[in-house]
Image 1 (cartoon, helix red, strand yellow):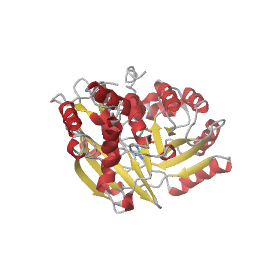
Image 2 (cartoon, helix red, strand yellow):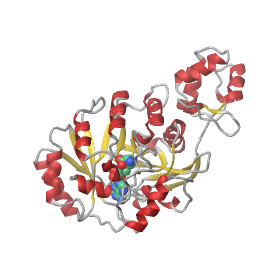
Image 3 (tube, rainbow, N blue to C red):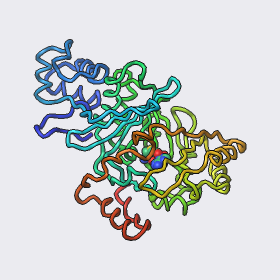
Image 4 (cartoon, rainbow, N blue to C red):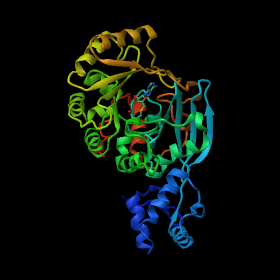
Length: 382
Ligand code: SAH
């Protein structure tokens, strides 16, 4: 793994795995078992300084402080929705904004976590996409989101589930995502059960395979369309991985957590909500161990896209269910604080983009030429 350092040269200890901390400590002449103590202080207790690690010898703490630092996200804002949803706006060390959303629901508290600053996928309907990709998040930044939410909210809001459905495409950042998820899953660290952890993706096929082989977590795929043409027009990634290729990959994916893939389907009026779509969706689900989660589009002033009527959504769902497909409808939460699906990062749109960011260029072209501009966006995504 790359080592993440701060301007002062100190290493971001929380981006390291337990074996990496062990190697670091033994390299400094300390005993190996100290690493587990340190690791638990970081992730179970969430300490902010080495001095708080009271069972670690003072000499070892001093060694640690010479080489490492303990990173945290700065809290910029915590907004609470009328429906109990909390949105956390964080600032990273380099001044980037990211967001997490806690959604309380019937005894369950689901935390929606960001994996990147912005997103490169440029899905036409999603506001996060407007930011373009600024950068990947480090493991510590992915892990500090639940840690710091835990520290800020009381037992009533204890996080029971985590979904990688915040800003970003988690599988585009798989090199940092996997070490982060290892910290989520580790009993000695954040200790989330693997059935409680879901990674949502636009469907980067090789990375999907790699994730499923590496870790037992739930997988959700944002499908959002039933033909290649339709999907290409809203999710440019379809140019790289066709619907057929994606569905084939899903059929053969080793599922080690829950036994089904969730297919998310954002319903957009007049785009993908016809009964012909429902019929094609039934066909697409053949041979899949799947459930479908219908997400009525969250309307916003920046898009001309409309949400279908509730009656139509129910009719669509009914069609799926009567054809043997488990299908649920996602209830919109946190709209009043811009915390709903597809709204994250919105307040941040005006900030300048990373220099040379291809996506920014694409955006400008897109504005000038309509939507057919994404041919080369994904060249750097293996
Ligand atoms: N990049 C990953 C993780 C983000 S999850 C992925 O696409 O799966 C965000 C989910 O919200 C995705 O399923 C996306 O399709 C959906 N979404 C985006 N904008 C939306 C909107 N305005 N209304 C409803 N759902 C939206």
